[in-house]
Image (tube, rainbow, N blue to C red; front, side):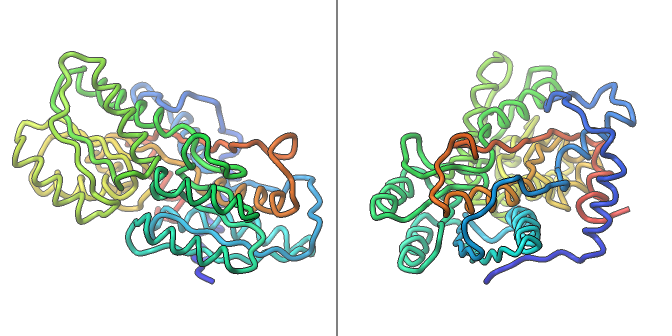
Amino acid sequence: MQKFFRKKCILMIVLAAVLALAACSSDAPANESSENKTASDTAESASSAVDFDHELDSYKPKKDNYNFYFTYKTVHPWWDAVALGMEEAQRQYLDKGITITYEYMAPEGASAEDQIKRLHAAEKEDFDVIGVDVADEKVISPVIDEMISSGTKVMTFSSSDAAEGCRRIAYVGNTHNYQDGADLTEALCKKLDYRGKVAILVGSEGAPCHEDRARGAADTIAKYSDMQIVATEYDRDSVDRAYDLTLKILKDNPDLDGIICCNMSNPVGAARAITEKKSDAVIVGMDHDEEALHYLDEGVIYCLGVQDCYSIGFDTIQVAVKIADGKKPGKLFPEKTNEITTIIYQEDAALMLELLYGAV
């Protein structure tokens, strides 16, 4: 079983900090500007971005043993955070006398073809439920439909659902990737006073979450006559490739004003290139990479949209148990379990680094 563990001392720091800040949680808009934020506003943004305080719901599982298979786009720290939520749900079930085992596997690089092979191999095994973070909705959705037709219980999870109309049983994850891209881009446009040249780093071609964010970004830019997209590139969720692409974009567009980054890797690659070239281009991007948070703290990155990976993992296990028991979406769980995204700014960075990485 492929598993990911963080040092227990850091996790304890996280939990203690979250408990201390619990009273500060709020329903402030995700795209709130960094201007005029108080210290308590900063605590609200950072502490509400990731919810570590979870308890299993009142559902009583039918069995005392479950075995799941989960495959996702690529080995990457983002999915390590999802795994932490899974591990906590697993621990709480064990406290109730219920053993959850699961395989959590992915390729080194995003590949729909690799994902198909993994799904077909898993289908031959005795798993109660198979979960998939869809690498390419056009390619993978028909495969899921075939598996469902053969009697396999399949759900989707993480950041990418299957295509509309796919017969997958349920989805747990981000249901608003388009809006995340639009919100980040709106923050960038406001920062640039609604004029300038920007580039978009997408991620993996065909990955629903990356493509949806890029569409949200492009549609937002199209609203403003003085904004222009000068480049759209796919970095395949690689920091190094995002770095190389940003260098090329800067060479072709030395007057670049901004970069919109649609996954967790490309804000890091873009920030490295921007720093190296001493460019003033404004970066907005996704998620909670430690290096990206340091760039946010330094002002190299303007803002980041942080997804609640921990909740995604925890809720995925709970939903998988119910699906294994033959339950369908309805009163027990929705067809789509939505998890939040919170946009954080420079003043949020230090607290977020402490919460997630124990950095002081």
